[in-house]
Length: 266
Image (cartoon, rainbow, N blue to C red; front, top):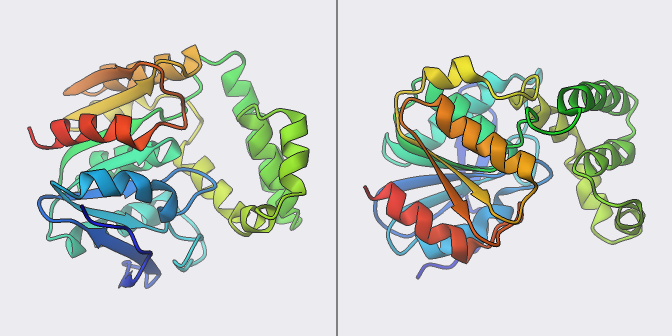
């Protein structure tokens, strides 16, 4: 089994932005895409068990980790980033996105990139969350203002409140050694927000996806997340749904990896 040692490769995206990535294992290519407030290192634990059967690429999305950034941001640039990584992987790959990273891989699949199969884990579309659309609109407005005024800490706190982290945990995080690192990637919160669009399941876009999509949810996650995941599967012509008993949004890589391995080898 391969061991993840960090991002030691670089590739340029179409707009010249350098992307840091690492590949492990041998076999068909699988690219893992992280969600908000995370880097490629966040999904690296999932790469390790998959590397027995696949060449697994993990990367720092633009604006975080060791990758660069180029203004102005557009979701299309992140799709081009995936195109560059697919090229580095040999011209075809399976994609797996966690949380808002799932929204990005779904956009990539809809754009016609050479993708064999797609899997997503709990993409947080807010259709089934109480006041979900309203909360997302308020979050977008407040996040935009905080970042425009350079209030990175407040931007991080807005996100943590959106994902319903308790106040005492937020205040503890602010005092913790990890907080400067969280503030460092705060501008990328706007990127994940843009990838999610209006925050609702993009049924028209998903209807245009021509490759199989597996949407996975955790059985111990909030009901609205499970329903949103099921809605993604139902909106894709070749969509399927899987529920992992006992798992939450912080899914155990050892529980998810066998599901992905079976799906990607079909």
